[in-house]
Length: 169
Image (tube, rainbow, N blue to C red):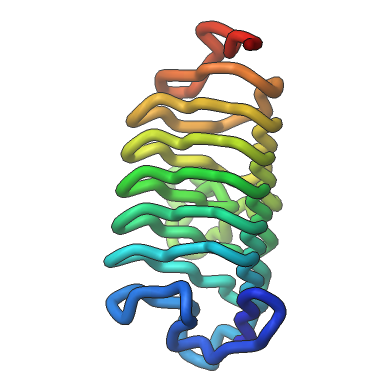
């Protein structure tokens, strides 16, 4: 796996913007691409695993403590993003087969995930595969993003739904 931070390549074990107790990618058995923009900071317990796909963090992205991001089919995070503790970005959904078929024998439904710039994901937010969140989003703690939502909104709930728009100064 290749990780890049501020224009220079760094090893998968960490970077100048990563704490030593965070993980940047799995073992070489799951090669992928991890791109870190300038001023990104991965906190304690954070996990970024591309799993043969890619994870791209634009500049000034802060995945908080114990945030997990998997990138099997691609995850893109715009600049100036704050992900509070325990956030999860998972670009797949489990496929549940009919009774009589072993659940583990069925693969996941994997779809790329894109989150725009200036987004704040509250504590424990989960964003699932195929979701695009536009610029300027605020997603309340514990919400689950299962579908695309328009830019500049507040969302909450399971599944996340818009409950108001951000005001303009």
